[in-house]
Length: 592
Image 1: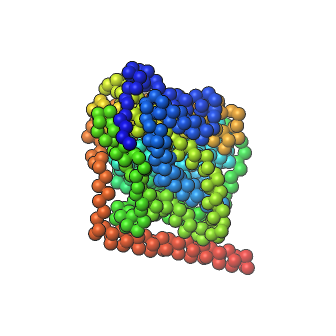
Image 2 (image 1 turned 135 degrees about the horizontal axis):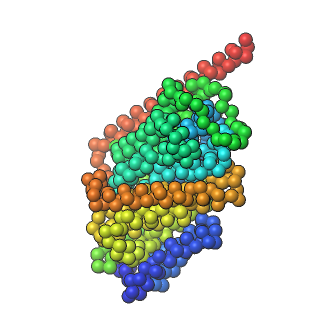
Image 3 (image 1 turned 180 degrees about the horizontal axis):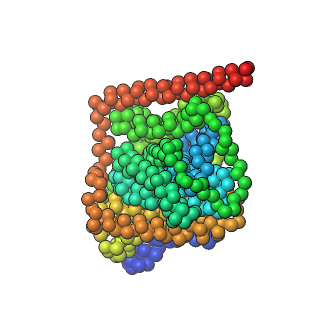
């Protein structure tokens, strides 16, 4: 069966574009006006897209359905597989009680509210975004700030604004990975492009936060801390995104910012502590001191995660793991079954079930290895994993549905119809492209979902006006981060975590102007990247060279895996010995 895409099925590009954009308008209406649950809105959007593809674009039913299946498979693997692994690892630290040590350790570093906001809302929140995402950073950091005595409205608002800088690389790089899958661009190229945009925002956000809290004059009193926090984060975000890939920028940059700021505060303090005029009582214990072994034990799952993800990102390791376990197949009927409007074949990539080399597997293995280190049995770990699956069942449906819709829109020609209209904005399109990402995150609460919705559209529109598509695809992810703070889902999480349920409108009013200010900055940066500072665009190849398996890499890959095993064992042994020594010291103290 062969079918040729229709770009203008109604012989009127305006009407055709209105039909093509109908699923996006529907999800807007369902989420904002009807306040429908995300998974229901996503499923209905997919259904509407299928109906339009079949009855308006004349796409054969079989091809339309299999396009949706193809997209849903990509949503489940690797996207959801990575999210499940990340949240499972985070849940292990919570259920084992180790996360309480992390929270107390973070809160005990300083009593100044300005510095606590930098350390917890910005640096620690970014680390959590990279490790887990899915609303966890705002929920955890906002609750921590309220426990320290922050005004609940400021705690929620500050954490939502802080969450802008890391969102594009959240949940171990999931938004960038899905952007690459949808747009057919290399994930490394998108990572590099985003990594040359967001660090500018990352430098500014710490100052922005403190000015919101205490005003400009009081901000200057802690300028050294602001500079150390922002510059260290921005530098490591840029370095990791450009040279390691999209999976670890938040984790490494967040850890680096925490360490740099903590070291600074050991040798420098502001002249006077600053607090809010009226504060609720503090509920988090900050006077208790933990040993180095206890702190290392609490952080060990995340340290191991960082090591594992770095190892899994090395090409020789990927080749070795793919040699042992990988399955590629084409979705029946799609290969050679779809033709572009000009009659040329539409390239359909095979579904790659790289179940060993996928980063979600690295996260799962990290969680399993971490169980004995944090004092949990494997039976308890299995219960936590089942709890994680139950916790994520609706987000999994949402992601699979949204990616399924994206594939239907791309294969049917709806994306090209919308792109033709957007391309009519001509040279101004790069300025508007971040707004699509902002809109997508505002609607769905997820940069991943936004990228699934719009990245193919960004690619096609950029190609139509003659600019490098990696600029606008990356702009979709970068612009999306500025919509996170006003997304209804994010605001609901923030309100619930600080006890302001029913007062979501107050949080929205707190954050909305900051969302537009940051969006405007990203729009200007994207315009400059497209036409003025074009040297900043990374060089890349659209055709994946990784498909060529080099036999000589296998030996190197297996050697790296042996080295990884040795490093993990050494770290586990260090945690064990430090905690054993701590236990002996505690027993000796009790006996005396």
